[in-house]
Length: 219
Image (tube, rainbow, N blue to C red; front, side, top):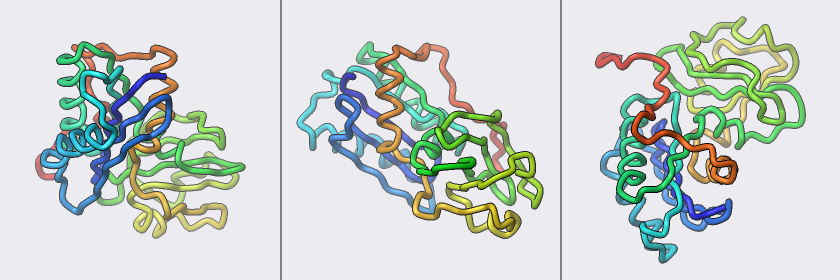
């Protein structure tokens, strides 16, 4: 499955994993209140390579979380990924940020619903079944008591804005997985390895993050 470098910067978690044959062999990640991705990302990349005694020239592909999420975080992660792919002439893989959260959420029934904070009562979200199959389009949603009435049955919410979600999502069929807050390059590893094996690569020249919403300076 190759030697992959996975970059996850869509939220406050700056996360980097080195992955060999689908298994994480080195990981660095840190989540802060302020975004420090510009300072930490390349340091983390150097550290995981050094820890595993791997040269950057040995990488077979770069995988990056494509969004939705923070405009700044996505821009930094995708810029780094594309720069490495250009320099090394290796493929670029993109992974949905919401899919990464869904993949980290173990459920036996019902729906997995990742929620990524989009300020105030708005979230980026999509609905997945218990096998992580996407059942709805990704959308920016203003949470309300009726937001998920179209999805009867148990719903498991995961993400970085569960405290505010709990204030409106109060039905007894709703549960909140608070042990997983941010998407991680560690969880991304298996998804990226599968995409690499299937040769699902992006066009490095034209690939852009999935911002979902236009950037607003005052947001």
